[in-house]
Length: 128
Ligand SMILES: [Fe+2]
Ligand SMILES: [Fe+2]
Image (tube, rainbow, N blue to C red; front, top):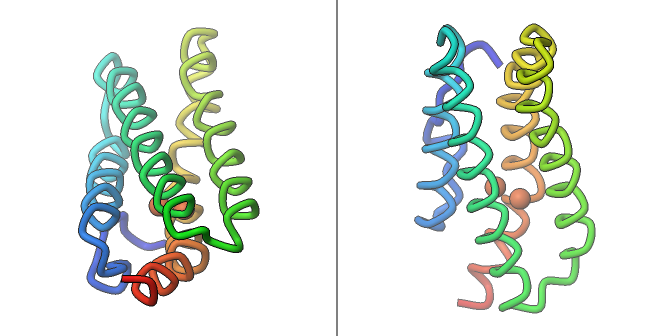
């Protein structure tokens, strides 16, 4: 990804998801050159925003009886696992490793939106 921007190409047409994805991308963009300790606080905010987004999607999948829910939830679990490493790394003085995880997130999330979230959005639109 050349720049960390939530553009119209990433919009799914589900306002609650588009809004939380936008918040996450805006946060990631602002974190790229953010010094500490502001970066640490932004990592906490990022974890909360990502958890909110994933919870919203998990709830949506449950509500519509989404057939691919298990694989999608599993991908969310992997994202959460890597996000969970960030703050302990910062606490242990491993800032470079923490920043590396943060830098990897835009590409991961973009790929996830373009595949699993998009498939979920299509399924939601068929039910609605
Ligand atoms: Fe998402
Ligand atoms: Fe998702």
